[in-house]
Length: 226
Length: 142
Image 1 (cartoon, each protein chain N blue to C red):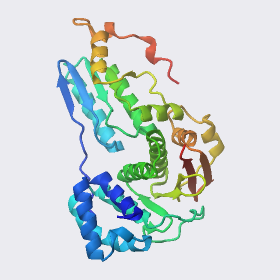
Image 2: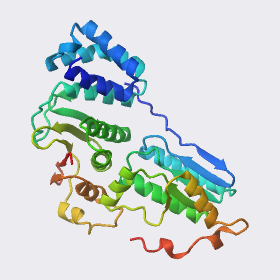
Image 3: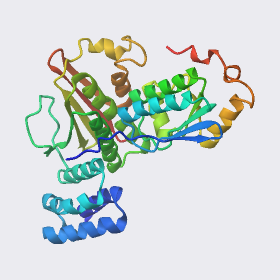
Image 4: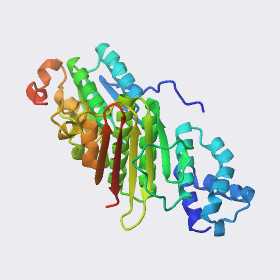
């Protein structure tokens, strides 16, 4: 088994036992006609496709199943390009530049949060940084759900000199009329609206807020490995 | 895809005059809201003198959930049931501090054992609830 196959096994191991993961992986490799000793990234999609039926059987919880598949899809694109700040083009859910989680229901907030944590863990972040990333994702996803109704969270890994994780939260909601005021904390109480955004800002290394009243809000955050 | 839409419920265990809630699942807002209602109903029965909320199984506490936990504690307290939150993971505690949310006014303990001991020390046998608590601790919150 080479390094890439090892990455896939590591993801499966997060959700399944060692024997189950290995047997799923080897049988999927056989069906996909790929060799785990010399697996190439280009072969991952067909391998993941063959893993699908087995995962459907062994991973009963839809959320875990979805997260596992998203993480697997991500292994296929190691060096993804940066996510543009412009509005998203209509594309399929698994983009080459990261994982996209549509936020439409309250349940999606939990899903985005779990995925953020899973990805931070996969990148080898410490428990504390994992928790910070997951909390930040949770705040952003909740803001989308609460104030815009629907939107999208995109998570991707940052490779290069500094390894890290980037999260972009985007919605076409009402926007924030006075972002400076919200972020200053002068607005409402410690617990009111804005607490989430302020908290998020304090948790991450980079924070960009782009908001237009009536058009929507985009927040981009980055957290680097310590 | 069919999502599991029925609301999960967190069980409330009664043990020698105390209510024990152990959260072992990813907390969605609906689950937290449901818990608040269930705890209120459990407090209303009147035979509980304390409530312990064990969050050792919670890996993420964001601002909304933290506030909900605090509201839960305040609500129980208003009903005469003292609350102790216990088992906060180190990473969760560090994240809360960094965000500037420290669960003001909520008693906390390292683990379930200590939480139960703390409740016992707060309410000696035979003392009514309102004589056992300390009055001014909840006022400083902004």
